[in-house]
Image (cartoon, rainbow, N blue to C red; front, side, top):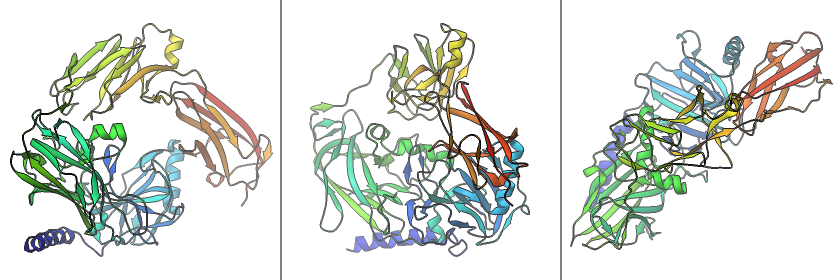
Length: 567
């Protein structure tokens, strides 16, 4: 009992120190509704840790978004992908707040953004050269409206707090934002890993999942295992808030071996440059095969995430014969709720009846060296340290498909993939592109750079690639109105575009030969023009749009409409 009390006191002390590092009453909530999270800080995402809070907006767009504190707008970005429409406010206390996936900006900001878009004749813009007196902002001032733009999966507000100087992201909950969370994290599964060639677990030199069950005290226990030599563990665990059913990420994960901490991972803050190490933090191979993410409680030496604390032997456990071990894996959320998973281990020498297959191929990657291979007109070139460790690579070319290992190995950098296209005619070359076909029904265009006899692309993903042909023009469809129609009461003009081959690259729309801004929702394929953008002279108007796909196929749509300017 004394030991438990001591551990709780130590946790409370250090948690208190962490809490006191940040001002609690400086920032207000960016929304006028209770904070209910659809995504937590540091949550596991595809190729990155989540960098902020995703705040639910009651399933709708258009809620007012307010400045969390006084400061000035230091950056505005509009993009089809990523954060969509976003605003950055720099504050005099050394922090910057970020508001993303917005539907539109407050009137004075919206007017400025549209003036830049019309000047550049572009939807995507990024403005960062603001002086402090260009857009000064008061605490609580309306700055935007919530939305679903960019890479959003539904209406919500993405909210961040960054250290202005270092640009490190910090969990906004440390700044006093209140959430209701009385539910401890939930363990879904645990994996055990044989980490050396002489490691044995239940007569296996392999990794596998262990059955777990919930005990009467609300914690979890796994089946007992027999092991020897170096082993490690990984857990599939999530958190929940009181008002929502969706899964959230946890705040910290630690592992005790007979009461001694071997591993600790805490998501207080991290930098964007290290977020890619999520692919080393999780069991990447399992994720690529089965889509579930196991957080490992052991790390590779190349994993330099700053969120790891006081590791012993990188979290690897050396099981000695004739000794018994209790492994305790503890998951905590920000509110201090915690759950423990206990795994009993008996140290015993055994022989392995099931062993891990040893990889051997003709293509051995030496991670610290430049590696280049060519087969049947396909060349792959990996810069130094593209791979995190030496690897035997599966590489073959069959029926024009370059099969470059399964996508089960994470890469640190891009490699170059080159196809010899000297056998194709000039017309064929115009319509060819490099495609990823890991999902053959849905080939994905790879940005293809073309030379006379070779096409090449760069990518961070292994997998299957081929040369695909796109000889189909994009589809363009006018929505809700017909050619020659009066539309005086219409507030917008909408067009739907799509392409079944290489995909949409760009488009250009005009009314009466003047460029107009059409906002593209890439999830629905719908382009929207707001008639308040320009004053139309006269009543008869010619709309024109030209759509280009990624290999240069084009399609045009012309339509005449009649509309009197409504004052």
